[in-house]
Image (cartoon, rainbow, N blue to C red; front, side):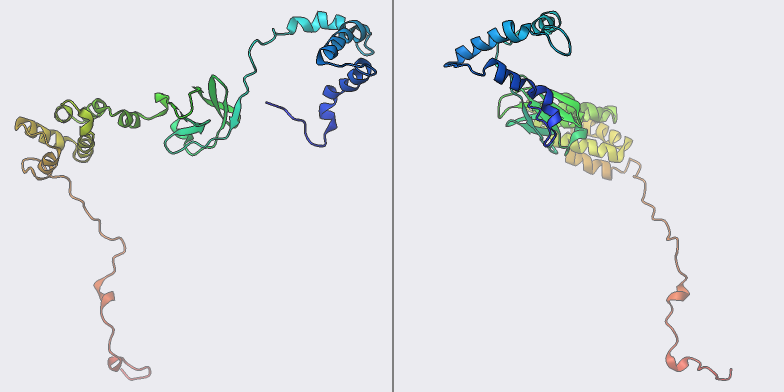
Length: 277
């Protein structure tokens, strides 16, 4: 990433450009160089034998001596592959928890939905940042593909996306033994993902009726009846089961007495001011 200097701040680039006049005037000034190979050979000879052997006015050391003693041990080997130029962008995380980078989709945690992040994509990884802090890392995928981390999604959403009927059977079993057996009977068959809506309805009935549904499921299983809609009618109408608690409407707090709603006296019946009693 190019780190450009600030506009109208010449001191920002003084250390970088201070060597330009010296190289221009002392190395290449007055020379007649016809090819780039001639310029490289001239620059190498100037660095090693001419400028590199002049004592520096501030450090009082030869530049070549200082390079060999201090800088060369810290140098890394020259790269053998082209520089990996990264892509920077500012994707917005959608309601489905995916963000698009270079025509590919990457999953993000649930609490980052509708957030705008800073993304850096190189040839191997895609990194997401929020206010300078790394929040997610994905392997780079080809355009049109998705990189999904299952830990980013809630259990229910992941189970729905994967059509995992066994997950909802386990959820139903938490509401009672017979509710779990009824859910397993609903999901039995070669295509359990086609019974997902029936499992959703069963879990909804369990949350609404509680233990009452467990008794209804036992009755339905004893009769070999595995139908979620008939089970819903059974749990509502079975006379052997205790009725659901009635909704009690509390009395209004500021009820007025009935006398305040009585019609006023007719004008002829009203007593005029000043009349004798």
